[in-house]
Image 1: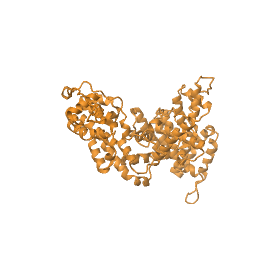
Image 2: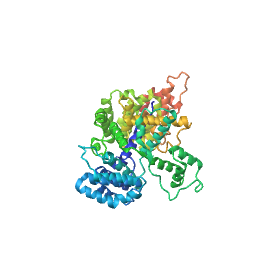
Image 3: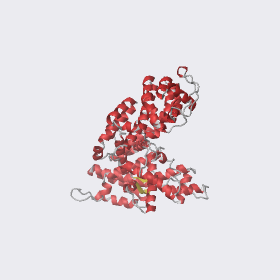
Image 4: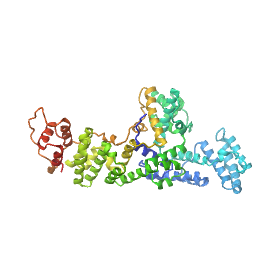
Length: 556
């Protein structure tokens, strides 16, 4: 299985996920969040931290500041009150006992009577803690699971998700995408009657779902006319009943895409495990500094993993820092010093990295150094790799009088690599990764397998690609983002309105014999570089005898 993976897109998705989970501060989010959304995320992060520290009363006060109805889900509200009760007893056995008893009488017991069928029986079990609090050194705890501090972490995640939805911030695309891929993974192995090589994949989602998005009354196909195909598609894609499909479509006013997203968000995720895998990925990719890891809230990664990937992290952090500074010359020097054979063995990577440096020199009006790169590196690489010709043509347009803004607007790849802060680091690291023998983090291994199975499942059982894979960018995630993918250009720029100082007079076309001294590759290279006809390219070669002489004459 050699499943490509778009690392750059995955970087952004995982940083957004960790931000919205409150594990990282909002400054790490790649989404263009409004100031109000960033402030809400900061509040949600604070609430999550308070719950994980057992400060339930402070968490309640912070939630009141959000001015929204808190915890509409009775099960979640019951679990919150249960944790409050436990924290009263945990903090101080004497004064905590009185507070817990008062809390039971006034709040917890009345709510438990009508919350949901099993609520009161669970409440009765918890009251054992008022009567029987043994010393764990002498006897086992009567309710070890409820007393465990892991319950704080699970509750904090569930509360964070509920508040996130209530704040109008859409759930991270990464978790929605994972739910869809894991669902396909489960069906694939069920139909094949086989075991997955990554059994931990299924542990990332739970068998239960959150309550459906509520309507005032249930609807049916006779109440509202829905497209039958949409109903069946929703049933098939997210595995729900027909009635649930009607309710979901009614809730979104018949919008199938929104209904799919809503139903996927109901599938419960193991955020504890996923957040650890995500942080390991960030360390492996060099996305976060050591200070960032120290500031993560409630989640840490294994020291063994850090030791195994320390040198990789250091190398990639340096690359990203140089890229963020826009110091392309230093990037070239750093890569040549640390990976001496990389650029010589990877002509596409060498071309595009030097091409970025070329554009950087043009922007700084350093035309002499730009021309030196074009003559000594870009042109020779193009002669050996003709697929680079369109890209070279677009680049050299800068030296032929095409304004920089016009080039960047016409060439999306240059725009991304030149304008984006750190735009070079992502694909460069991805290309280096392809050529290394380092063990990928578990999350990457699982994602490669999930994407491979997703394609196979739809090919074998639906006889067609997944028509909704674009909704969650699954299709983009399946495409590699190494430097070779940056060669896909749109329409090339036509040389028009050239500057008087750089416009040559085109020599007359000589009579050609069938035995031309120039091969087709050389002729086509000249024609592409300076946007002339094949006949004019032959004429120029006849006059100047080589591509190098033509470049020296026509490129100022």
